[in-house]
Length: 322
Image (cartoon, rainbow, N blue to C red; front, top):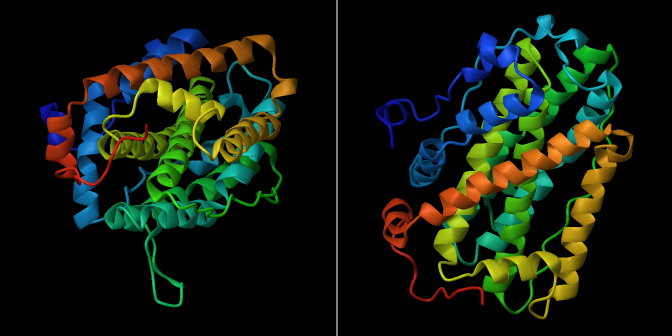
């Protein structure tokens, strides 16, 4: 970990504000953003921060933003109407954050109460929420920020149309349930990371700055969820992960196939994928591939001793998700 990150764990490089970035073609912009925001040092720092947030949860403050300066001329390389449609879909996805956090809390609580509190806070004996989780505190800023962007760019006020988050559906195997749900949660955070990074490559000025704040949050949460999963299920193979995603493993396979395919289909719908240009589609797919490669390289570098040092000794009763 670099000295800069040790002293300023929430500081990210500002390479995307240089003239070289502003004049670069979209593929080069994407490469610069991935190198700047998803370096191994940053990913390690965000994961190592998790145990500190268990003890002293502190929401990350956003940098000041000149909202009034945001205008359509700051959109680059994409039809402004498509850009607005993507924002609208993102708003609908981000709005029901309370549902996401409480479902995740319920899967985590029987096994990892500290992580459950980080994600979904705490509830009293009547089931009423008495403390917000840090994940919700940070993510609940996203929908209002996106709505403000939409209004600033279009002059219109958007009425969100959020979907109903999937509810808690336990079986008689809480470890398996958490693995399935956790994998889905990592996938959605990864998708948001890729989308906001891609939008950053198509923006400049204050618009770019707002998207950077969203991206930093998503990277922070995705990294913590991914790393926690590596610690909680240390012997899980890549084949098991792939089988779970495509729904060909365990007794809950039909449920998992429905969950993942539904999420993928809904993502394409809310982003209005069918209206995108071929170059825009290709660069987003390239972004997904490059970010996944970066994460996979980082994940392989994580050693059991390192994870136990950062997150604590692994419970002996926890087995692999085989």
